[in-house]
Image (cartoon, rainbow, N blue to C red; front, side, top):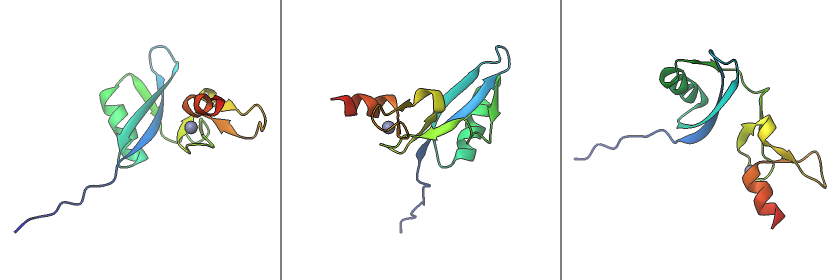
Length: 95
Ligand SMILES: [Zn+2]
């Protein structure tokens, strides 16, 4: 008899934090079952970081790959400024 274990599906979440020492914003991409788990993980491994748990204001979605990124890492489309792209997608679309 075999036991099957249900593994939660993993996604990449952006965790936003502020460094206690420098006051600078910090961003990390963490593979986790949920945003909460990603936040908890970063809070555990980076005790100097104050994790901002409600980070929706600081993140925006790439209109191409639909992943979440820090707002200042996204670039507006030259033709349609309402569309935001991450660096990867901006590179791909340029070709
Ligand atoms: Zn993208």
